[in-house]
Amino acid sequence: MSGDGRAGRITLPEIDSTNAEGFRRAPTLAGPTWILAGVQTAGRGRRARPWSSPPGNFHGTLVLHPTEPPEIVALRSFAAALALRDAFVQITGLDTSFALKWPNDVLCNGGKIAGILLESQGLNTPDATLCIGIGVNLIAAPDAAQIEAGAVPPVSLLQETGLRITPETFLDALAPACDRWETTFRREGFAPLRAAWLSHAARLGQPIRARTGSQTREGTFETIDPQGNLVLRTPAGTLAIPAAEVFF
Image (cartoon, rainbow, N blue to C red; front, side, top):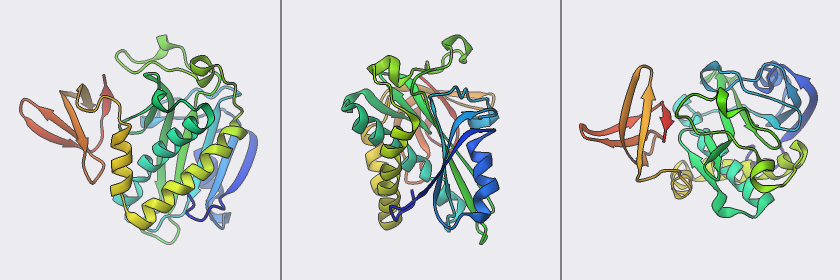
């Protein structure tokens, strides 16, 4: 998501976390840069959950220096999801197999194949840094028995399509897709991203459960609003939910 088509690339055989490495290197990076790791020893997902990072899967981070307010910066999770879907479709040719799950997962044939983790430091300062961490199950997926009850089961690209893709090859497709969506985002704002995301949204118009802390709300997934919130129609009324775990 460089907006200029010239994001740099740093490839490392092993690292604790590509996001952590992104923050360490950010002060020395002149422009948008990808960090790709063969293995992560301390990969993490949302809410600091461990992220399985075996060799052969994709573990990457795009490091940016955004200038927008935090609420605008956060919308880049939708750009990343759209870019991921574009990369999958380009590689596989299977347009209908890939869907987007709010807030930041990509599904393949209904199973979770990729996740996105945005982390930031110093927003609204000259040293603002955004790390967009992306994990993709290219050849292996976590054991379904380790997944929380009711969560979307994990799948890999290899098991779902029979294609064995290297992380470097995947990044060759992902990086330009990210750049295209970043350019759109900067020039036209969130509206075109919102429309594109909704056109590929999983369970749109269907019943879902949204859990925030200890509270779970059930309702119909109506849309996402112009701020990226989940809009849930419930018996008690329509709710705009900024952050939640979604279960089908």
